[in-house]
Length: 222
Image (cartoon, rainbow, N blue to C red; front, side, top):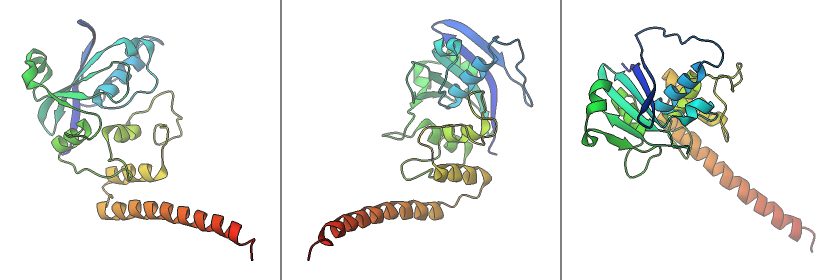
């Protein structure tokens, strides 16, 4: 522990099944000619697992329901994520393998949002099932599944020399937090202090700027 195994991926467009594959323990290889859909399958898998896909392949973007069958710490879990063309979609959980989950009533499915609100986010729920602690990524957010997948998943739109996948409004502090979290070097008390230091330094810089503005005016008078 913690372990997360992908057992099966099923993708639908409406009521039609576009892709359905069972995976085995160990290395799984998708192969085919250029344009046969390998990248689309990986994009759909990563999106289903909680990653925000920035540049959908046309065919993958047409699919609207992604089911991923998992084994987490030895227990089955099926997750479903809808693709409606908007960012930060929620995720549905059914605590059963995919065959049972697909036949389960709606009352057996539990919805968790992308972001923390009145209920835990799906990242928080997965971390809870994995039995790993939450951690701060920066002053505004926690480490999420998306942030962890930036180190695990690589695609053709990202530089091969980059450790993290590209992301707008990224920060070195966030990357350091995620990296140390995964390496087991994260210290919550230290990061809370670092976040507070950054916030206090911003306040200090604003005060300095005001004082400089006042001095630039009053300094020219007698």
